Image 1: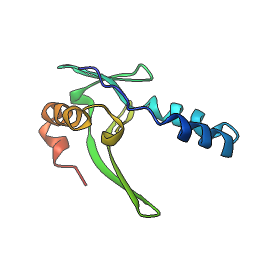
Image 2: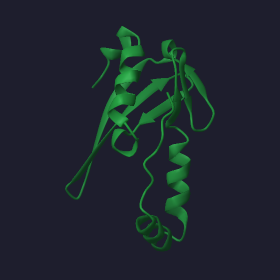
Image 3: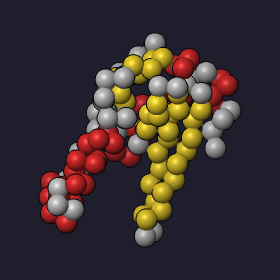
Image 4: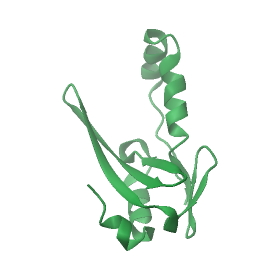
Length: 114
């Protein structure tokens, strides 16, 4: 299953770029390297090219952020190879991708959700 990102609007990207002197768009792209791009029966591949099998995940963590009344959430999948962020609201069919991941995670990981 291919995981596609919902792009930020052009106006927002431009504003972020101007106000941060180009730092924000670069930081966003670097963070997206830890997001999944491909999910299959064996594991997932991050946008940075890292392959992690489902059995390597040790913990799932729900992260809720509240910035001036705007609440967002993501799920961090932890493994010895690094953390994969599943930012549901920024993914095309994000709920479907999260369900796909959830069905393949080991049972021991599912009980670590905070």
